[in-house]
Image (cartoon, rainbow, N blue to C red):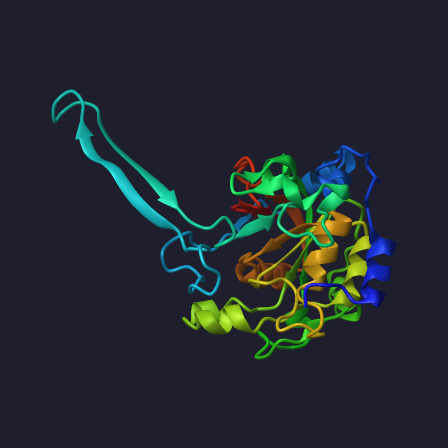
Length: 308
């Protein structure tokens, strides 16, 4: 289940960005965010409303132990009302936290997934050790600020959320994009809403984790052809899970991250934004989503902000 079938290897070759931005490139499709893309994002601020696209970072997060070590955030106080100059002087509190870097709203670093001995742009898998990723860690993302476009696939199908795990197709993305009236441009980030956070809202964490609607392999060329800088969803897996082909484990991850160098985000909170977009008809916005530059990490915690 770890090897791509031959047709998917052919697809991976067609969409590969290996060498596109030079042998030393470590940012992948984020290179598409040029000055024009940044300005396009700024120009999308027309209403003056902001939306956080992060779920709460707390112990009641979506992780249930299915992936060992991918723990929900845990906060520990290391100083509580410590007075340095008597009770009426400077008093401080301090704390620290621990969590899996992909336990809540996050980007996948390009070191997260590879196959056949390689990560993105020919970097060998061996750069990742117990000490972290010596190359392609999340710190290479740098600033992420561009235009975001929300594609509400659940709304396209007339549902609040999907009760099973349908693969989202290129036709679905075309239909959702047509409904926005927006024309995608190179360097945009696409956010795909499935409504799957519903299961977190009602406390069914295992249901949220184990059965996900999501992107099909048929959307890979769509994202490549539209030259998007990144794609994010409201699900834990991003691609439909269990997958379309039991012979290929997480093929969308494999091709996005290893071959395309495509920034890939999961567990993004899109419901409030989607409701606002449906109310006012504006589906594009400025998106600021720079991950915490934790050196060597294979995932990047992020609190994305959409500004309309």
